[in-house]
Amino acid sequence: TGLTYVAGSASNGGSEAAGTITWPQISSLSSNQTYTYQATVDCSAIGSGSVNIINDDVESGTDPALSISNTTGLSNWAISNTQSNSGNSSWYAEELNANPLTSENQYLQVGPFALVGATTLSFAHIYDTEDDWDGGKVEISTDGGSSWTDADNSIYGGSFIANSPSILGFSGLSTTWNTVNIDLSAYENCEVLVRFNFYYDFTALGTPGNGVNDGWYIDDIMLTTQASTFLINSASLTTGGNTITDTECLNVEYISLSPKVFLQGPLSGTLMDLALNTNTLIPTIEPYTALGFTHVGGGGGETLTASATTVTGNDRAVDWVFIELRDAATGTTVIATRSALLQADGDVVDIDGISPVAISAPAGTYHVAIRHRNHLGVMTGTPVTIN
Image (cartoon, rainbow, N blue to C red; front, side, top):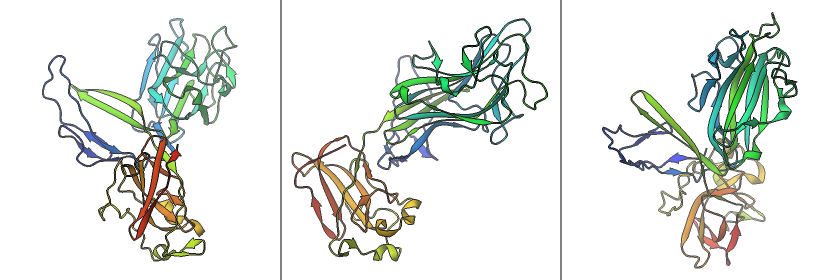
């Protein structure tokens, strides 16, 4: 979210299309030989809101971030077209009246992922199992799968596991699809695995004749986290018909500003004139790059979002301004820049027309300068601390 590829930045002949950077295949690779691939993305537009680390509606086959396994090989999670919360497909773990007499755990695993911000796991499900004996659990691991614990005990309405009805889980009959949300904030700054663990024993099945096959259906798996502090980097390597995918969360250092400034020319009383806005003359893309202003630190190319054009009243935009963060010691060295919108009441906001301005820079002390294409610029007389 808020990322754009910097054209021509991919090394080794890489090219970008539709948000994916592709590099030519390596013809040969010697033992202990290393190839390094680099590309640059502009994260200056990253801001508030959320991003989906995974969003699996099960309509496009198996998501690379998901994997399946089981304990005995009797049955396993598979994509099914018999039930779905949305679209035509869902994940299904079948409950069998096992023969030979044994029990089975089926695991649908998600991850690993690094949870940098506040994160929520959500999924839709429906199930029919032997009440209080068979059922499903949502588990989480922070040690690479060596040990597992319940992601949230409060989500279960029943209990299951043979001879241990005190162990909570989804069990019995659920006749309609329900959505479950699990807060994973307790695992912030951890790399985690999440799995859906379906268990059944060798005796009875679920309730017959209810229109739900015995077992557990899961659809619309989403892992959503706040997009304000990180970006998602996913890399895939395909060779010999095999694909390896690795996904990581990368910290992005940025600060938020809420400056206030007035342009003398259009100022009348406490508000500025909206002539440019009224006559649809505010450029969709910031004008400063084309005018020769030097952007640094990822600034430049800011573009109005659709929401910016719907702002009303004194929060309507007057024009673009050019923000500089300057070195606290000298006030002359520019650390980072950002084009932003100036409202009629003097507030300077981000490209959505309402949010604080996000600049790609670490928290610290800076001189803040605000410039305009037709007015003299201003700068704070003393450095200010910005988080």
